[in-house]
Length: 352
Image (cartoon, rainbow, N blue to C red; front, side, top):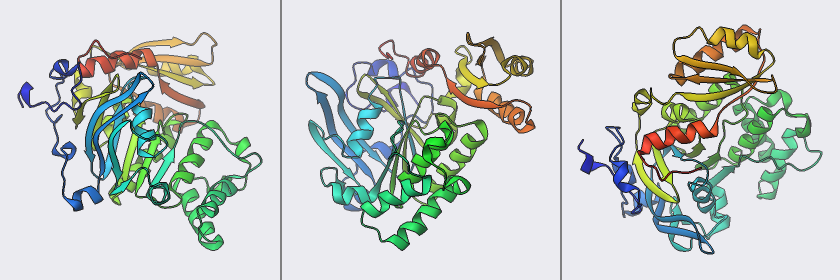
């Protein structure tokens, strides 16, 4: 593909640098607006959408048509990912333009909420509720009868592997369990569109892999999954399509498979919280793709820099499975990911 074929949305001032992206599949017809009624009824459509907060730009001139499957929104903090998600859920209305979710405008909440499930990255639970009560109560509020609500609640808990903890208080859940119970609540009513803001944060490697497998299963069933993430190698691994955002503009949309292999000069930095960071450092530093292993200042974590994050996460899964090291959490370091993001879009305009 020549550089002139790179698809650019929204007239971004950084669009010239997008031609430096080296993905051979960055353009995809999925994101070209189709006006047929059947296409719109099966798509999420942004038609010349802008959102301003007073004089502050949220997103500008967004034109997207998103088909079923896993679509990831990628960009640093402030890029516009949360604004796009809030627009899709109807929590925000656009300043200009129109949005429809499978044919339903986002200003029709009663119909929209039957189609959409939303999992935010923030905890907010009714005090004293168990996991089961948390999910079931919202199904009852939505008008689902008691018996059906019980069935849907049990099914959702099974899908996120929390059935054994269903009758424990949510307040006693670990961070990863709280993340999974929010996910269960968002999919319990069987929506057609699932919008997930940083859904892998706080999950240990094994549960993270199980959650990605769940996302793939839901996509195979024909669901739309819109996922916001900073973890680029996981985006590449699980996504059908990716939307690159910067400063409120959609710079490009399409496949980025293979781009990760071209990022050797920008090793990814990962922070791992565990009970034996020194022992973990000794295990991972023997790998040729790990270029740095450094203890956190509080001695409760380990910074890793790796050129091949996919291989590193597989290694970490094996270490956790051995049971000698207890990993509490794993996540990217924002400053380093911003550097990787700038490398992907070839832009000096991307900021945190």
